[in-house]
Image 1: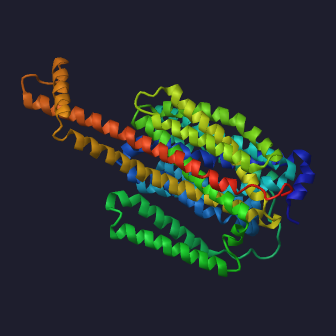
Image 2 (image 1 turned 120 degrees about the horizontal axis):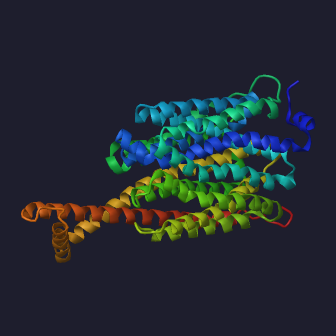
Image 3 (image 1 turned 45 degrees about the vertical axis):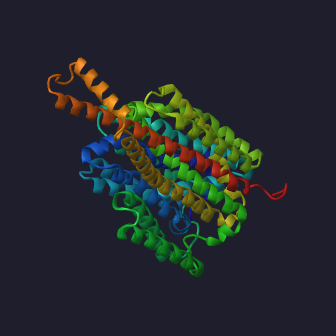
Amino acid sequence: MPVTLEALSERYGSFYRWYVTATMMLGCISMVLSATIVNVALPDIMGEFGMGQDKAQWLSTAFLAAMTATMLGTAWGLAAFGARTAYIGALLLFIAGSLMGGLAGSEDILILARTLQGAAAGMVQPLSMVLIFRSFPPAKRGTAMGVFGVGVIMAPALGPALGGFLIDEFSWRAVFYLVVPSCLGGIVLAPLFLPEREHQGPPPAFDGPGFVLISAAIAAFLTALGNGQRQGWDSVFVEGAFGLALGCAAAFVMWERRTPTPILALSLYLNPRFLAASVVAFILGLGLYGSTYLVPLFVQTVQGYTATASGLLLMPAGVVLGVVFPLAGRLSDRVRPHGLIMSGLLIFGISSFLMVGADTSTDFTVFAGWVVVGRIGLGFILPSLNVGALRVLEPAMVSQGAGAINFVRQLGGAIGVSVLSVYLEQQTANAAAAFNTLQSGNHAAADTLDQIALLLGQAGLVDNVNTAVRTQEAYQFFSSMISAQASVLGFRESFLLVALIFFAALIPAWFMRPRSLGS
């Protein structure tokens, strides 16, 4: 007889639900940590491999894209292997990807390693949601999601500080090894607390065509986004990639409507409240992962922070979030989720809007405060969104719903990192071009160059005798000033876009509200 969830609950008593939560948290902490900690290491990785920003963003995008695709296989993995085997298999794959990343000798191997990590993470997050949702009674599910979320969210909040220390003391490779011990802990606990496959007979058929089509659509779309700025948005390659993405997405929808074993049950979206929750999740992922990509990059490339300082900037937000998350989880058991979600979206949007005022002289504590405000908003959103999305589904559809809601959030995240990377590069280039246009034939710019040359000469930094050399040095210094200011303006425009994205999410969040008092 297989070891079921009910049998384990009887064996361990009322505390069993917390044993399940702790076991799943070990894997989730590792994977959520890896999703964001590499952002702190980006400048070092770019320097070692000579990578441009257009390719470096694939270290985040490849992880998120692979995670997005495999999330849809959660329901099949549960039915085919059971929670225990699926969880252990995912952790082993994640360890393999982490070791490959730490030993990588080229950027292509590093991107492959991130893809393997993401593929494993895609199975574990929705699997954790399903088991916790089933282990707790309805009145306690929000509390459970809140406690679970403390560990999951504290990891990327506190991890960058530890990751930054490891990078400064050792190298960027250490961040890949950091997550291996917690994965091994999850493998040890899984046979004790996770159920086996409950259904007898042959495993259900896997929707291979559907998986290939959705994976191809995501990969083609992200490839087009990643190459558009460099090759031109009207180039044959980029337009072809967008066309392939659109064609694969259309074929995926048609196939899922016909196959008896769909990897994504499109009928879920016939439920208007689940559909609204999915739209919110997509926008949340787009803004959340995009902003998590922007903040460490800004403070390191514009403000000159070390990796350790960049990580410490996020630490106060993690501590605050650890307090807010369980409180929001308990609130979601007592009040309608859409109110908490809308409050959280508004707060996070305000946080991003405050960052529009950032520049090279923005104080560390001020910037950390802005991040804290955003994480307070995040603490209200996630428990309520997960509970609100699954609460409206029939019990038989919970595993499909968990995979689907995580899928759209991660899809938004993968697209968000790519879109904001492109947007940042484009806005920075536009600002630099505008500055160059202003200085061309501009008497004020010429006077500024003369003043710089004079100051450099007085400081003994250039040869006062050789006028040509002094003018060239002044011009280079002036150009570096323009480049730095253009970078600041590019980041400001990107933070503004994130704020607008979260404000836009208030509209679908409103449609998550129950239609009657009893629903």
